[in-house]
Image 1 (cartoon, rainbow, N blue to C red):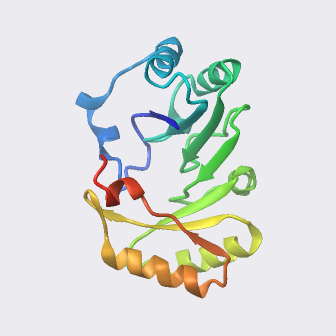
Image 2 (image 1 turned 60 degrees about the vertical axis):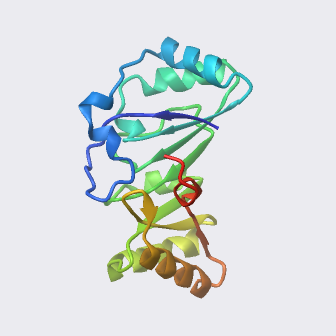
Length: 182
């Protein structure tokens, strides 16, 4: 999968696992044509694209970028917190990772829902996860990271939560962090 990582997110979560999106020195402004050219130069045989963040829905020109990838024959996925508007037409798969209250339309459009959890999540959030997992076929829990490594206590909590769910929840692990890939 070819990642397109956007800079900036209106939420500014203190525990965000991608803090580079807040670093102005790390930002490169690229046009749609430049992004497609980079894709062709780096990964011309990879047809799967992931739009991620920061927050893709807050990025200007997102609909144009998605349309350009689709015209080039790509399958386009997006991971979003749901903040910033509706997903543009053409996105093939949406992973919704809610961090705040969202309209039901965001959940209805999501192909999967992923909750990033600390070792001691709020009981109200746990009740929401339980309810969502009863209505949606793909709900994931992912342990929060401590800097560049997964938090062992959060991993243990998420593992126990998945086991107790009777198959309604899935465990998402950031494998790249386990093996030391930035």
